[in-house]
Length: 212
Image 1 (tube, one colour):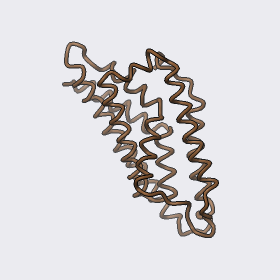
Image 2 (tube, helix red, strand yellow):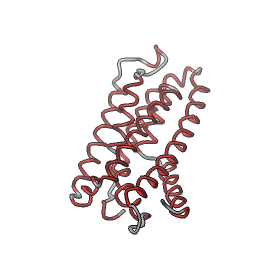
Image 3 (cartoon, rainbow, N blue to C red):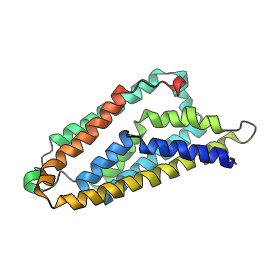
Image 4 (cartoon, rainbow, N blue to C red):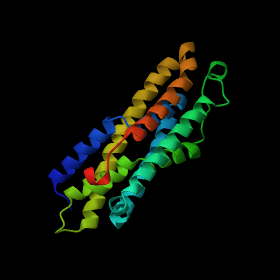
């Protein structure tokens, strides 16, 4: 088991990550703005699945790859940049005209979930969280795997609550503005801008596994 101080520290760090603009937040905002609160929550489900994948990998020791082979971090970051940039381009070049049809192209629940999953898996900051941050709160005298699971669960819980709050807030604003013609014209641009900004965040990141 983990002590309360470790759990609290993990929760505060996780909250800080949630409140700092990054690929996950900007992706969720883009889908909520373009398709509504329900779409944002489905996308968040995919993000949660990505967290779970990292937690299992870290507990099994697979995330040590980033420490042993630092270039793996850069490869993951570049892949994330390309994926988010591609999503932004697809939004800009979408076949649906927001002026005439009133909305950008809607994605199915499966696609929303999968995109949330991929966006999180290609976010190297999350890999660093499980590689470099969580181990600092693990007491090696105890069961390391159990503590890693517990700390990772705290991180996932805080991330889900925080991001869900952001999705609900964005959905409320989107609903209030959706009836306005100007909003319909801006909808696609805002979605593409959010995705493009997320790509820029990753592209400009210079963090290294050993520096976290």
